[in-house]
Length: 68
Image (tube, rainbow, N blue to C red; front, side, top):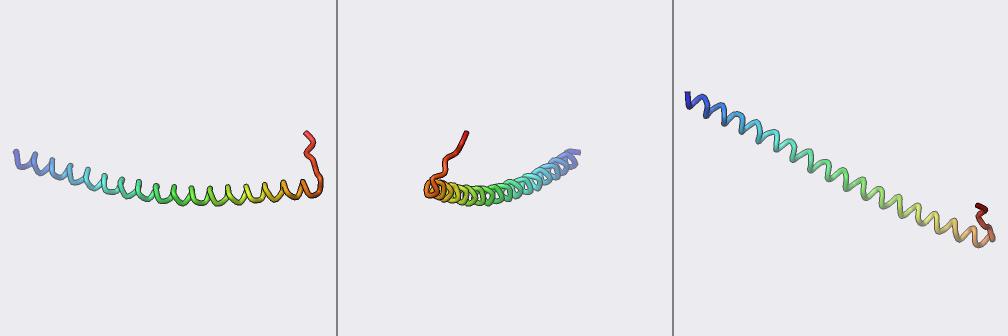
């Protein structure tokens, strides 16, 4: 009887260990994907800033003023 309990406990621990390994892999993958998204966001943000600066220079050159 105690061997059955020990074997059952070991099997449960093995399953838990496998699930933790899969979860760890998923967390690692999500971190990598998030890192890529952050890089893309920064790149787009820089581009928008440059476009905004260029637009400001064009408006100044053409002596355009915003009407609000």
